[in-house]
Image 1 (tube, rainbow, N blue to C red):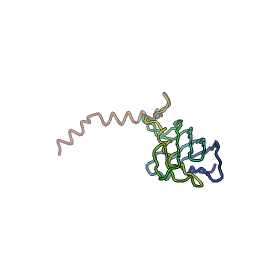
Image 2 (cartoon, rainbow, N blue to C red):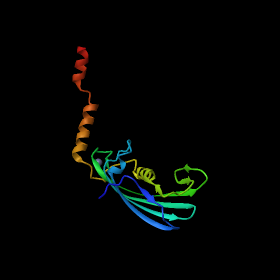
Image 3 (cartoon, helix red, strand yellow):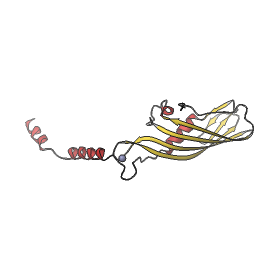
Image 4 (cartoon, rainbow, N blue to C red):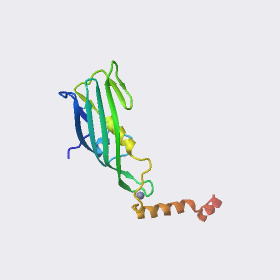
Length: 165
Ligand SMILES: [Zn+2]
């Protein structure tokens, strides 16, 4: 499948109507965002555009999964994400880009929804990222547990060292 790193809707030649678009994005889409934690994903973006002479309404539906490290065991897993977002673009005398309503002076030949889609995906990733119950990496959990025990225990050898110093 072709790697897609932008979501651009061509407007040239469209008349007032309802249009449907589908995009698939993978990890390459997030490469230009330095702070993104996503390197692997498989996400489908369905966009419905309702176009009228002075307004565009985009309904964006995002489904798929992103590969993230689990908060409990630290192993990466594919977490399902799903969500809807609406964007309204209106003709106005000046440009103004709010979260959900954009004002632009003319529609032009295309509209770039790349950043909007990026923001949607980031919003739909839950803050708490954990495996389904029982699916955590047991080995990783055991290692974390050992590490905790070592950190918490007061190893008497440290006291001996302190006396020497
Ligand atoms: Zn886990």
